[in-house]
Image (cartoon, rainbow over all chains, first blue to last red):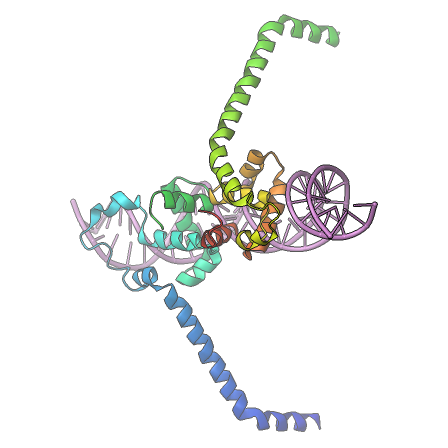
Amino acid sequence: MQLVNYYYLVRSFTIEFYLGIIALVFATMGIWVGWRLTERKSMEVGLHLKQFPTPTLPEIDSGTYGISKREEEVLLLIAKGFSNQEIADKLFVSLNTIKTHSANLFLKLDVKRRTQAVHRARELKIIP
Amino acid sequence: MQLVNYYYLVRSFTIEFYLGIIALVFATMGIWVGWRLTERKSMEVGLHLKQFPTPTLPEIDSGTYGISKREEEVLLLIAKGFSNQEIADKLFVSLNTIKTHSANLFLKLDVKRRTQAVHRARELKIIP
DNA sequence: CAGTAATTCATACTTTTGGGTGAGGCGCGG
DNA sequence: CCGCGCCTCACCCAAAAGTATGAATTACTG
């Protein structure tokens, strides 16, 4: 009895149900893509152009304190208040990777904490 | 026996010992005071510029987001990259107190992390 | 004077960060 | 080809940060 009832219910809602699911999935994807695009600039460089580092420009070091591209991305996201996990998600890498980047960052900036890194990086005009 | 021994020891070292102690205490105090004074300026600026303009003016809230004097001090020190422990030492209160202040701060700024708080506070022009 | 806000502190617990180390893959320059 | 820097990731351990709750004190206000 109940099975029949349930089946009937599912059948009667099948069209709207699947349409709803599909709409939801695409909406989520759209939001996702939009969200990612708002963060693009540095990320596109990191994601698509990372294999073409510094086309004959080695002297830029003077301003970056030896901070690599990836490290600077992390630095910017830290400055925006994101957690390591959130940064990892944004950059499609693992949490451990972000930890490594931030650790190297702290070495290069000679600081011990992320808040300190942000403060210092701002002093050094590395970030706005 | 032991009491006598101890007494003798103290007596024999009394002059240099006490002079050393006193010198040490004062040196420590001097360093300490000097250290605190170097941080005074920015702190007082931050405090006085934003906090005092409320003599019988409850509507100024629109600018401070209900952030109290102490909370703003903590906020400024967080923005400078200090740890909670360092802030506690600077303000002569316990670590727990700073945690409480920062927690309340995060509620008022609607954030979850200190880096986020700094970012947000800057957006809101609460801190430079 | 009762009520409220601010400040202080504690205890206990969870999450986030940071430190140290090792390691594999990739591109570039000698 | 080899080394180097960069990026990636893992594991472990320790410290710092954050959450939740309760509470005492002071001070101002209606």
